[in-house]
Length: 238
Ligand SMILES: O=C(O)[C@H](O)[C@@H](O)[C@H](O)[C@H](O)COP(=O)(O)O
Image (cartoon, rainbow, N blue to C red; front, side, top):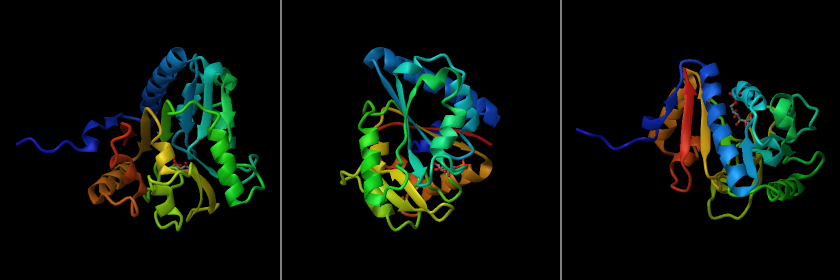
C-alpha cells in the first residue's frame, strides 16, 4: 500500500562525507553558474560549523564566475572576525580561497554593535545581495537547531514567525558564544534552493525525530519542512 511521501524519502545519501561534499559542491556550482549567467549575479548563503569545511574547500577550487557571486552567512557568532569562533573567519579561511577569492563576501555582524544595530547591519548587508538567494546551505546541530535557530532560545518564536518583517535576529545560543545573529526563517526561505547538509547517524536520527515530531519550537530544523515556498534538499552521509 503506497504511503504518503515524506521529506526524507528524497534525501540524498552518500557513502562518505567526502563524496557528499563533492556532490554538493557540484550541485551548488551548477546553480550558481546558471544564476550568474541568467541573471548577471548570484547569491550564496552559507553556514558555520565543521561539517561544511570540505564542501567549502571543494567550492573554492571550482571554476565558477565568482566575480559575479555575493556570499553571506545564515548566522554568525557576535565576536570579532579574527576570533576562532567567527563564521566569517571560517568562510574566509576555507571558501574565499583560490578562484573563490574573487567572490564578494558580505559579513552580517558588525563588531561592537549592540543587538538592534547588529540586526540592522545584517539586514543592510543582505540587502546588497540578489534576492531570492540562489542557494542556501544549512547545517544542523544534534539538538535540531539550524543556522542559529536554537530550541529554547527566548528569541526563537520571533525568529520563526513568518509574518514578521525582520530579516535578522540577535539570539541567545545554549553554546559558546551565546551571542549569535541569525537570519530569520522568513529570510532563509527567501531562496530558490536550500540544502540541509548533515553527516553522521546521530544527526540523521535527530532529523528523523524532528520531522516526526513536527514541532519547530522543539526542533527548529523542522520549520524548513513545514513550508511550501522553497524546496529543501537533504544531503547526508552516515
Ligand atoms: O554557526 C554555526 O555553528 C552554524 O551555522 C550552525 O548552525 C551549524 O551548522 C551547526 O551547529 C552544525 O555544526 P557542525 O557542522 O559543526 O556540526
